[in-house]
Length: 378
Ligand SMILES: Cc1cc2nc3c(=O)[nH]c(=O)nc-3n(C[C@H](O)[C@H](O)[C@H](O)COP(=O)(O)OP(=O)(O)OC[C@H]3O[C@@H](n4cnc5c(N)ncnc54)[C@H](O)[C@@H]3O)c2cc1C
Image 1 (cartoon, rainbow, N blue to C red):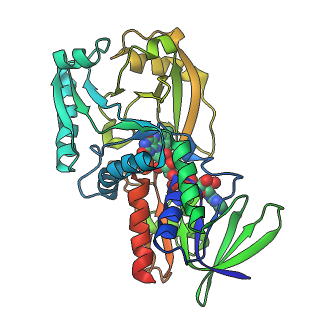
Image 2 (cartoon, helix red, strand yellow; image 1 turned 120 degrees about the horizontal axis):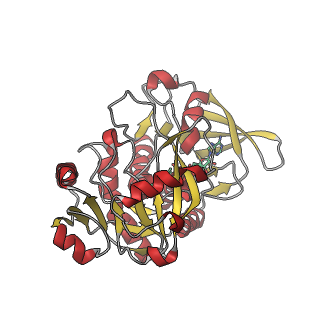
């Protein structure tokens, strides 16, 4: 059996960023990424809003807040030095009526407490200057929020990882993990469907929607650890190009209670096309990417409250992504889990679970944290 230093499960944006960072720091380590699909980023990393978030929603001191605020400038700098397309387009969180002003002020205060730069409160007239067609009585303007070509980002991260001798093993589906004397024995199904295994000293679980399953394979009681994933679908509807041009920024309503979602909002892609979404649909399957055309009315009503120029005929079902949400008690906000599992008697195992939004924004900061854990344990 081949023995390596580090095996990373999952080639989404997080697994790729971790591989690139570890390989950049120590290219003498034998590092492999095991990915079940034939190429990178086929799950959540290619089914999201591609927004570089600023980090204002999350509780101060949470990993989501810290890694988003740290990850935002890291990502812009990475884009600049690696030719990854982006636009610092800016974002408005709007109060559609007076009664919502308190809710957005709370988000503003949270952002300031989290150390988010570039936040300004706008009154109705200032909103009109930026967005003449949007119905709002006030808004937060976030100057550091932007959009990114996430596919290009992943391609660059993959290149950096392989340039520093990390191996990318596609069509390798991890099926079992066994604790061995000097690390882990990881079993997988290879490209030809045959079972095989490798040994590794470090096992880094970046398996996204299946991160709880990989943790369970390692012997962790995922219910007791709070690692169980309860997938939540987010659907998008596209906005006709003519109407997309009437919006200059990313435009969000106040977030949903308990941060269940950010509210059905306007995202824009780098080509100027606008989409509405994602909504919040409890899912029974981990991979269900169908968009229910019957949800058009729900999207239209959500948009009509602040985008009066959009008609039902401007909307069409677009795409969907699955949030790897942790099952947490009602009323609590789940945080990222990034843990070296020494307490479970599993040294060398690092689990990353519940890496939902803002995981894309935070990917480089997450990668640094994981590489620090590995450095400290080597
Ligand atoms: C609707 C939606 C909108 C979002 N919008 C934003 C946004 O605008 N900005 C932002 O910052 N974040 C956003 N996010 C969050 C962001 O997309 C995720 O945090 C990020 O993509 C997670 O990356 P990942 O690498 O952890 O997971 P994934 O991309 O899911 O990658 C995990 C990989 O592990 C592989 N894998 C799983 N099991 C196995 C196995 N047994 N063997 C081998 N490989 C395996 C999978 O095939 C997959 O490729 C959004 C998420 C959703 C769902």
